[in-house]
Length: 613
Image 1 (cartoon, rainbow, N blue to C red):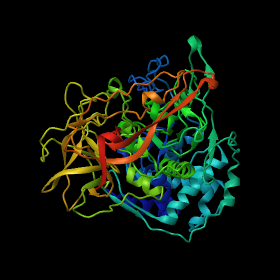
Image 2 (cartoon, rainbow, N blue to C red):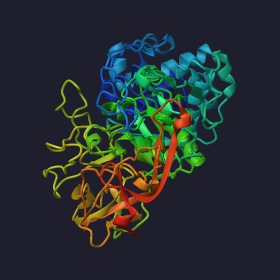
Image 3 (cartoon, rainbow, N blue to C red):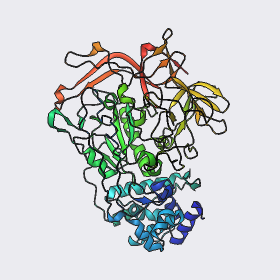
């Protein structure tokens, strides 16, 4: 069997394509993963993402079929939920590259889908074909291939094609090394001297992108404005977001990372339906293309927790949790990282895992909401790589005796056991793949039970399901060390000791100094909350008091949890279409956000003592 590095070298030589171009295009499309012959969200296969335009259908409806109120506000009934529907996503002829690769190489469609070497050869043949069609020289200089690279994106607008090509050349400049899903290490050496000839882009004769004037995006990426609809609905309801005036009226504290559990086009249909939910941005998998739907000043309904919604910007990434590592593409990671960096700089959001959180880190608003909270983007989202791309790498900042640790496994080599990736065989083991999560046990041994999350599992035990984060800690999260025994480390987690394998020769957690909260002396336990609302006395007469209802967990004396941020109670009343009736209520009650389990939660400042680890 031809190794992947050799396959890239042979295909590049056979078709006269610079090897760096072939490697960089493949990295952008698939991160060099083979994906076991499974199709992407755009019906693409293999390291070169060769597409055959097959109709895809998905019956899983991410946003509301699991009972989570998209608005995340228990002060009024949710919008009418819709039933999951099967639908077909069809792609333009420009994306049907598998058949053209078969014509150029003589390979069968089946081999191009499933054999990595054949797939890489097909991708090289396509690039050479595009270069020839443009009238460009069959050059050994990577700089001369800008037009062919832009066409490989399959983009329907010049700006989108240019974005993709620019990211490919960024990879050529920087270089990359990665262990693929097949366990093979592939390397692209950096070539900072390559300066692409962008003049070839006009030869593609692509139209310009419409609707880019209203967007809030960094200048370095192309964005599209596809607005979420703000409309009155029957029975006094409205949708699908709330008009506000952030950050003037409320500070933005969070950026929430979601995956769509739906294909891109259907996701756009959902956000344009006023009876559905909303979010601020959507990113497409195959090329990282970005669309904005809700202005950042306004409150989108995306996190299932009204407090978080009012303080957050939500980003949806096209993908499916159980196959997320398969088609969270480099193009999407890079565009998202640029966007998050831009938003963080603009609104003063710290680039850490207390402020840049997954939907799976958002707490349930009240006890009844906890069980149905969402799990995306899941264990296959590469948080360390994401923070590297933002220029805010996750690094150790303590020594072996530091009382707090940051979870930081080597994503590509960390391959925990998961089940549930195949809907037809829910107990089957998921294909081996890199992961950002580690399992947490009740004792320091692999065969011991997983720790329990009484909110996620009121009855029953934690499972190894890819959808079950009850007993998982994930990259960037910081915890207080409870005990160490040999190659095992215990942390405080949901009111209990949680053990994970952490050998010194291959650690999955690193020392990381931060603030910690401990119950104030004299208290046997401290209540934890899913929201940081004001004290009752802060509410004016025309705003109903929101009760401070503790969650079902126990934070007992003798335990400590890391503090991610400190805030003062705040509530945004927005239950009508008439924005003149909206109110921001601010109190004096101070809260600390703690990393209590997989999700963040809040404690009142008077209940705890905060110290440096």
